[in-house]
Length: 409
Image 1 (cartoon, helix red, strand yellow):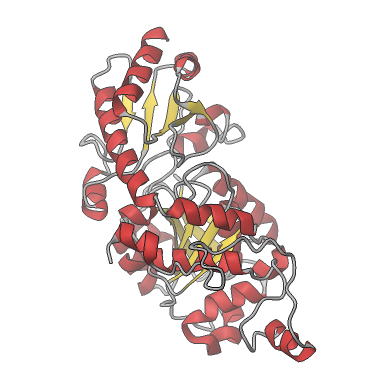
Image 2 (image 1 turned 90 degrees about the horizontal axis):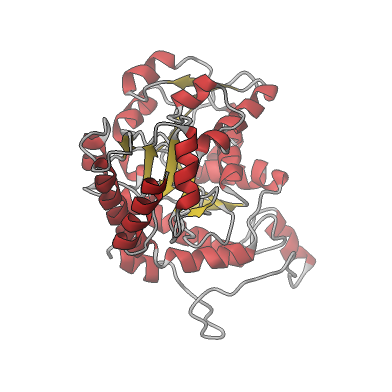
């Protein structure tokens, strides 16, 4: 079954009682069981069933199963947001004095979260170049997680997943990949050796900007050992499901980061067109990036699909000649960047990515407003930078819109 067919037909059961082709929205806080004994068994995970939506919900289960199939994992946990997904995924395996190794080019919100973890004596080592050599040099006995984004936001550096996975396996360290920008349309990190894959499903998976959510998908292949991950040992009897079993019984349940069933329903609808949207958005992004290269007023264009990108060859090999839907440009000054943004007719000024519509933002004054100058530079954020999440509009209209905006700046 190919990608788009799988989106429409794999793990899509609907509601057999009524004939509904989509799983209904089970907008319920709690679920009744027919006996106290049965409810007890559901609570103790001795039998399948639902008790409370903070723990699980049928609509959420439907969404989770579709993501699991899409990423090629064994189980998925849907969370209230992408940040909640990252928090839960990491806190499920770390404890005081542990370390995370991360690329410097990750999303600013994730950097903020990692700063918050320092209060719990969980520290992050940031590396300038996410290469196997640099990661290996920074691994210590305290390293519990290697974290990276498939495509950095907004740096647009491309991760060599297979190469990093080899280092992680050599040192028996959990490798977590945020695949939000690439999506499973471009690459499935679990197939290349990642252990856990995360999405802010508010973005391309949803596709319409109507639902905040995040997902964590487990490959089930990581070999847990007591020396490095003692907190997982209680769940080792669950075999490949040990990670998710602990996640559902502890940090996910206790942090209350559950997803609204209504948002799950909207995400399931969005999933059906993920392939079509990504195909169009990627083509638009490449065409727009090539046009920017011909524009004298644009000082620099960053897009993995361009030969000028230092990550072009990795992207070409790993993504099979499609390069994502995000482009950044530099205009020479903050004032010019603002003038371009303010003159656009179609692109919306929105702090989001992955919409069907084209979205723009000035990262330095928004997402990275509290970051230091060094942190901004490491993340590829400059005062004259515009981040563009390219949508599915007609490319002629997008180019014309940016042309008039740039000419007016």
